[in-house]
Amino acid sequence: MDEPTRGPRAGAPALDRAAFIPNLFDRIAPHYDVMNLVMTAGVWRVWQRAFRRHAGIPPGARILDVGCGTAELSLLLAALTGPAGEVVGVDVSPRMLEVGLRKVAAARPAARVRLLEGDALALPFDGGAFDAAASAFVMRNVADLGRALREMHRAVRPGGRLAILELSHPPSPLLRIPYLFYFRRVLPLLGTWAARAGLPVAPYAWLPKSLETFPAAEAFAAAIQSAGFSDVRFRRLTGGIVCLHTALRA
Ligand SMILES: C[S@@+](CC[C@H](N)C(=O)[O-])C[C@H]1O[C@@H](n2cnc3c(N)ncnc32)[C@H](O)[C@@H]1O
Image (cartoon, rainbow, N blue to C red; front, side):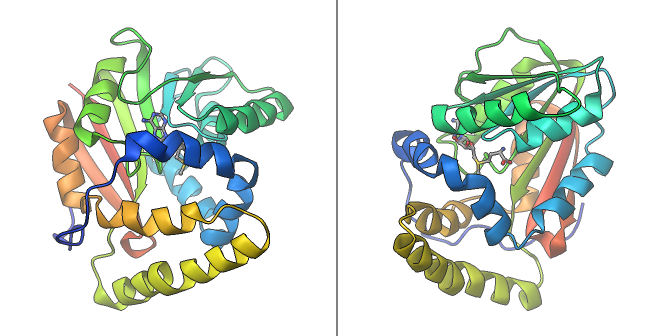
């Protein structure tokens, strides 16, 4: 693992995620994919490529995508696992799932992806039902991180894999300073633009808050281990703006 980094801002207020997250994502669902592309300046594609290369998803696997949203990761997982595999996505936001279902229906070649409503904190599956569990940009949003990780551990069979992509805290001040500037100064401007365009502003306010209260990569890796996973590793992407965490279910 790399050197320790700064974690979440000390004294950041506790956030009641469970109360408003489904509503927030329902409201932004129609614009989510475009906003994602704009807010990450297209770098999301680079993170997807890193996920493809390093997540260790084997062909033919049955994979759970927790917080699948508009099925971006589900479709990538379906490409990795191939026609012999299957992807099951769960999300708390019905409107995000609607967008995802349309994308799955339009996918060519057809993708073996099922999407259902479900909560990361109480996954609607038997223990050991999956060969792997994956998630992208969801863990910052859950009300109880330890519980979400324990649920993923329960859902994966012994010997199965975990792969999580999540925003993180860049270790270098050279990157951290412009990164925080982007979050604190540029994103609010995007919020103003969004409001003028009639889009909801809440995501632009929520994003920096969700990151400030999220653990640094080392602490997140420790949480994955505490949930019961072994061989826990992480790889920083784009200077640590995003981390890909991988682990095995012992
Ligand atoms: C930032 S989006 C990421 C969506 C998708 N994974 C992607 O990479 O595009 C976060 C998603 O997590 C979902 N989510 C948040 N909390 C959840 C929970 N407790 N259980 C299931 N899904 C949740 C939201 O509804 C939203 O669709």
